[in-house]
Image 1 (cartoon, rainbow, N blue to C red):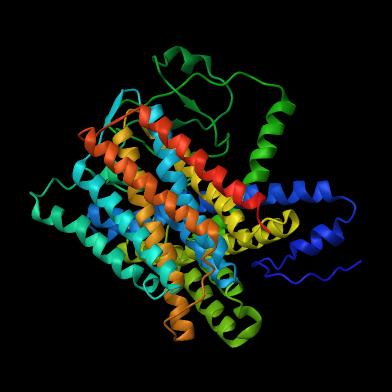
Image 2 (image 1 turned 180 degrees about the horizontal axis):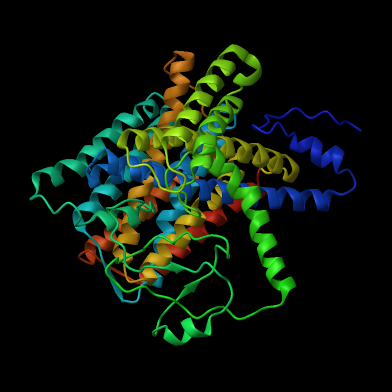
Length: 525
């Protein structure tokens, strides 16, 4: 039996084909289950790292640098929201599976502009959804221009125009920013919360007005006296246990009274042990490695910790060097960086408080600048490992790389947009959800396609890079033009009051799109 399979491996160095055909020989069904579970976990980590670590880092950089909200929305915050798609495209390009990343981007844009838009319309509580004419026309027409440039590249069998996509995105940013600069200035915080919620980027500092104040109990024992004295709506929080005295951060309004809830009911010891053990195992395996290698001033679970912050400076440097392959290739660089990092860790430990976050702007910016590098390393590493697993899945299932990109990769990267935008629509803000469906794909296409092409041109110093424009890519481009023109026409004819019934039309369009790809796959030679 041949147990030597050549494939592009991810950062973990796992040959998934050897795992399936050799290590799990005779247990193909178990191997498929393991690969499927590992694939789901990688998708979760990729999206969760972007949402929980990268977006807060970028939003803090925007706040600390006083970047205007409109500029932040279409640059750094859009980068945080589209990071999984962009880095998946970069990883596919660097691993030689460019058709996977290309079709994943096109399939993702098609999914968002049809299925997600349709779901937002159907989930809306009103029969029509009002749409801002200028922003909608700008985003849809920009998408059509980008698709037109890609079609031009297909017709000329060249990537010369795609390398200029970052420049095109700069023009798009100017189209967003300049009208705002010419308009009457709005108050500083008028749309701040809306903008950060729109790009799924939580605010961590004083620009987020608090609303509820939680009081964390220092004892898990129920107190009948306190329960009798508690007023209606009071909330007891016993998460930290009897030995900790940390107060939970206020959420919305510091002026509101302290709110406490009745103590939890007593449960059996094994039920509590089971829940605690699972929570701690999940934290140790999934969250702790990222918290130790992504420096953040405010960590979403436990707040500031001097020991963790000092340790993360060194561990982040080691992690980035390992991911870049510099541990063995350049030992002197490794020793120099680790020595400098250890010195910085010692300075952080000596110069900060145990449980009080630092207030020095330079220290905060240093932490988040290093956190930015760490987030990029994490997301790129996860995307590279994900592409490696998808390549093995395509080989095992005999699916072409383009089909794997159109289905598994595009759906996995877009499912977060589906759930978030539908939740926003059900919450009474379908206009904001629809704006995200057309604004985000502009960034994903222009940067996700343009950046790999630009890097390829700089590496080869040639104006042409071979891109496999297969039939699936051409079908995606055709359906994208059809859906965008259809949406633009319906919205314009409805005087920018998009009807709910159009959501079902978009569902049907995506079903037809999927059916065409399925027919092409079944009739492939």
